[in-house]
Length: 130
Image (cartoon, rainbow, N blue to C red):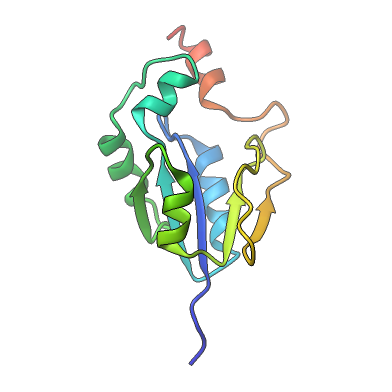
C-alpha cells in the first residue's frame, strides 16, 4: 500500500472567490490529501486591515470546499504547523512568497491566476469600496 501524499497550502480566505477555488483545485493535484491553513485574524491586521470574517468562520467556509480534506487554524508559528502536518508538498499561490522551505518537502509556486489582472480579495474590497 502506498503512502498518501499530503499537500499543504494556506491563505486568508476572507472573501472567498474563484481564485481561491482555482488555487485549491491546483494544489490538490499534487497529492492525495489537502490540508489548508487559514490565517489568523492577527495576520490580517498585520497586513493593514481588519478581517471581515473571523478565523473560525473562514475555516468553516474553506472546510466546505470540495478539494479540501482538512483545515488548520494558523497562528504565529507556521513552522510548528509544518512539523505537525508533515507535508510532502507545500503549494503557494501565484501571489504568495514561498516563506517556508523545509528540507525534503517539495515546494510548488503556482504561476497562473484565472484572470489577467489577478483575482484578489484586496481588489474585490476596493471595488466594493470596503
